[in-house]
Image (cartoon, rainbow, N blue to C red; front, side, top):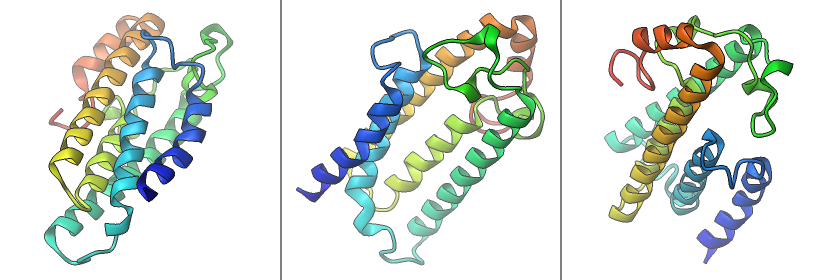
Length: 183
């Protein structure tokens, strides 16, 4: 029962923050919201195992994923706000947050290697939490979160091509979506 209560409590702010995109099937925000809900379910299911068997290989890999997640979100958000020139009036869209309304294509730092460090951070977060206490059902939830993050990135890329055109298409050719040099 605690799992359901925790899931409900943690879902409230995510629903409030995502309310503008919940019914827009063409917005990357809807799929990001669905991924967040999967991540919240993983957290509600595995919070009890956060420090269980702390030095097992599974826990070490989990912590590596979680630290990578933290690095990616900090590096990505910092560059987006510094170099992306957020708050672009020409790109005003009620479904985008201010930091997403960039007027400059950011392709330096972590963005040189991956187009979506913030979504990549959510992928690492998903699998880091999953590894705390993996089950077949949580494997399904993690795979679902991954699918939603892929959809988020695909819809986001369509939006970026509309805004940045050929410059973004060229950027897509020389960078990976989530993991440098791999994917």
